[in-house]
Image (cartoon, rainbow, N blue to C red; front, side):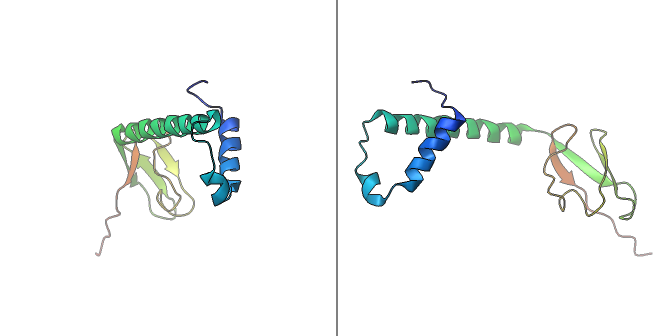
Length: 115
């Protein structure tokens, strides 16, 4: 059995487990190959997720500043990225990472001129 389960096989196993009744689940042979395959798949997926989370935390920040007014909405990133957003800022558009450098996107607040 390989350490890396195919996505199709994982889907099949997880779908099967979701359809099981409590009685069926309680009668599972926890020494079976199927159960071992599911556990190996879950463990591999967990390790992969942890690696991705560590990579995201290690990414540098990329601060985006609104260069024009909200009507022209041109955003400039530390990395040199320039993006025009038609409606709202990066956060309102669900952006968490800079599409150019991959850094964690930090939106700099607008300074309001009261004068």
